[in-house]
Image (tube, rainbow, N blue to C red; front, side):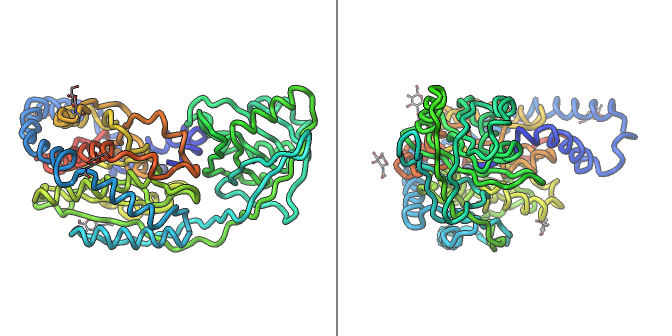
Length: 490
Ligand SMILES: *[C@@H]1O[C@H](CO)[C@@H](O)[C@H](O)[C@H]1NC(C)=O
Ligand SMILES: *[C@@H]1O[C@H](CO)[C@@H](O)[C@H](O)[C@H]1NC(C)=O
Ligand SMILES: *[C@@H]1O[C@H](CO)[C@@H](O)[C@H](O)[C@H]1NC(C)=O
Ligand SMILES: *[C@@H]1O[C@H](CO)[C@@H](O)[C@H](O)[C@H]1NC(C)=O
Ligand SMILES: [Zn+2]
């Protein structure tokens, strides 16, 4: 998960665009001549008809849901998704966009899913290629101390000798504006408190450009996390057009608070920052696609997904190796049981999600001609810890169906259907009216490890992954096999 950075900034634009795209994609003919009363009446009628049938139809899947759960949680497939994730991440390591490791990862998964008996192909994508290079930061005054840093994705580097400058510590963008005259030629340190990832990530995303506007020469940003053992967290940052590009890196909570305390005491702080970071020309990559073809409506698709790329730290086991593995495992479970739904089950392992959902956007652009055949889009990119429910966005009629589907998950205690399906990679489809689902896990620890050296297999638990895989497989299979596609929200 990476891309929320742009969301606060673009939210209103997205809402506007989604309105437009709903109209153009769902009502390709002039929208207004259609009487809205007629549309409402038809939808109500449809809803009423479905409500009377749908509970019985979905309840008919109780046995098959139980079989999937038994296989994943207690049977021969127990711990398989965890073992697959360990083999994959131990072998390849981390997989940042544009890297040789990401190429190896795609080859590995193509090969592994083919050997598993799935129908696999690759779809070419051009992706960003940012390289970190060597980097370091040291506090020189008021005392000498090394600072643990991670440069932020897309940051420029410093001159080879580094940038040595006095520090201005601020707690917010408002404080920076108030003290703009003090920021000239300084390294601005942001020591913003952690509120939530979605809100606080604005400092990582826009801190460099905001500081550059008031004359700063570099920025160091407190990592976007509620918890730290001196661990810096990387992630994408976003230079504003027309604003000077200055080097930017994250520092630890501990060092941000240390420098804040020095500043409160009126002590002068001096830091030297050295970064080799640079952006190379876009690289060739692929989205990796595996399918079980539907027997009745092969052109209609339930799409499951996670992303194969990671940052260039840790193993990318949690973000998002786990999501990728359960999206593969779901197909394996269904295949192992000899099941084949009416519609096609398609697992897409996205490339370059961390760089802004790049692979997913290109996939949407290429395939949106088939929008009306995409039944449901699913993404797991918030960890594969203990599952607690399914997050879902769709029409009321679709929600009624999904409420019945999650009842089939009673054996694993995850019968909650929550609001707001989400995921960077599925959002283009959801904006266009396709129902979307995401996995909600007990994720209190997710942002402790997110985008750090700590994102390793040690964070993962085999039993949790069994449960996530079972949930993912039951939902995907049942929706793909129902008589009708889910009703659209527009
Ligand atoms: C509702 O559906 C029934 C049959 O399914 C149809 O005969 C009737 O015309 C529909 N009513 C409206 C208002 O669309
Ligand atoms: C699955 O993992 C759990 C927890 O580590 C372990 O107790 C169990 O024996 C494993 N099962 C298999 C089949 O490997
Ligand atoms: C649309 O779907 C059809 C049927 O599955 C397929 O043959 C075609 O390649 C798809 N086109 C795109 C652009 O995805
Ligand atoms: C589900 O909850 C029941 C009752 O609390 C418990 O006995 C069972 O072990 C749980 N099942 C799983 C898979 O967690
Ligand atoms: Zn992710």
